[in-house]
Length: 317
Image (cartoon, rainbow, N blue to C red; front, side, top):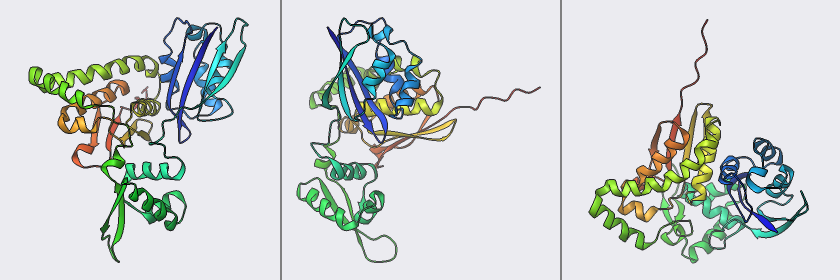
């Protein structure tokens, strides 16, 4: 008996992360399904439409498309399930495996949303936070005080236009550490050796190789998608690697990709050249020229990338 284990991360109604594990034997790479679904709305009809273009038997053996759909879109969201494959054709059992999303050091609900909002747009006042969440400023002041007592949030007095000063809140360094940063001090030591022996080009080459593997798996699936869908998939892939990324489409041929967290923040401080590898990855997967408009290493609250492609020409008679 084999099994399929699907781990879902649903953010704001979209599939921000999807991983498929198991001891099934298939002819095709399940990464193709992961890439195809990442960034899509987490709605049964949308997922069903995406799955209609694939044959599940290529990936999982004797499993129906309906089984895979039920596995990915059960009645309860934010939960991973295991599909147990028996010798009885097209028969499956769904077992709840608990939440697959990694919380911010155990924070949930409003406090987690508050921390994420600060990470995206800091500094913010209690009044600004209240407007974003539709609650009272006093409700947020209590949470902000408790987070401040925990050493996660700080405030400073700011003068904004007419009127008295306001208190603007932002994350402390300890608060910043709640967000994924996929590095360790040995990595910095190793990069120092690479830079000493091969120069900055060697450091960039190392990180480009890392992203190239992700791009190579994604490009065949994304090639036929419109730019906006490719951008959503790129945002989902970067989020899966700890970057907390969102995308928006200004037009059918122009998109913005915005990263609110840098998974390599401390490494990028010491080796700013690694940032060029991320730009190259986005360009490679989108298949367009990308312009970086803001950069966290320059003091901005996010890294923003703009991409556009030429509109198809209208045939002339």
